Image 1: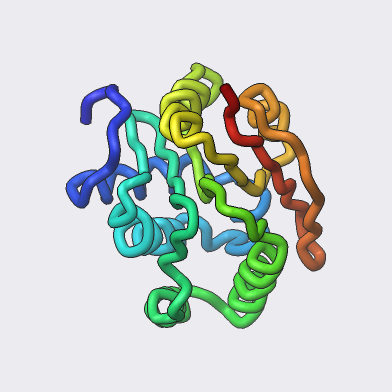
Image 2: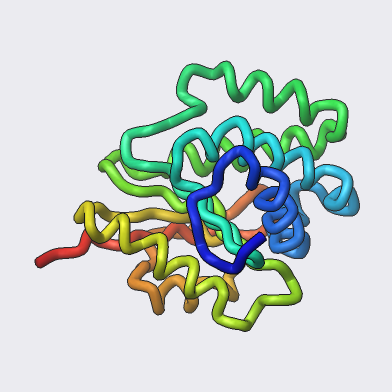
Length: 197
């Protein structure tokens, strides 16, 4: 895998999955969802999302250490419910009842608060643990937002870790809410206005 940032294709799916699983292993929301089962669940969890839902949209980017998963405006691969049914069927054997309930709570909360205006959605961005703090995440975000700024579109994300909020703020995102999971951590919705000029 070269260090260059590029749009992920099917051949990049395993690498993107590994980067996301490593980068999110200690994330507060992921830990709340899966607790001690993180290492068992994450390859399946991210593998399905990357391969089935996101890579086909042409807006997942990878480098040797980082992966960013964007969803283009007015595109929702989960809208007709079929993808969600397959995802649930795949994950169900790996989750207990509490974990399944937490997944439903997270999905419901984020869906309810998702902006209605057209925007690019940063569903996930992660850097391998060993490369965190190296600037790799900033390089990835800057690279991918060129496309969004060229289109003069806003962007939205939910930060699942409060320590990352200043990182996103440095890249033009502003806090636009606070979502508290039941008996769990908070997510921070953030919005980045469309580029002008």
